[in-house]
Length: 54
Image 1: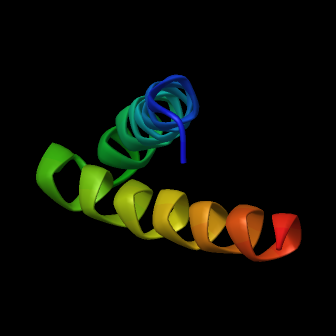
Image 2: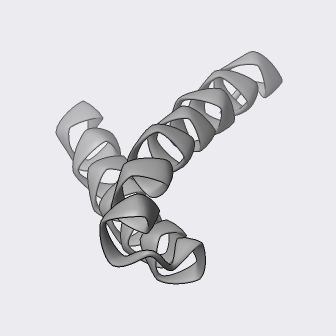
């Protein structure tokens, strides 16, 4: 994997975590749990995205 692809992937991953983490955190009044849920979603998306590219 090229360095540029890695950087692009990381930016997409962080954007998903931030945009999902804040609303989920506000829902439970606990940002830690919100970002934990968002990390799970981002990981699942990332795995599905790379499996589809193979």
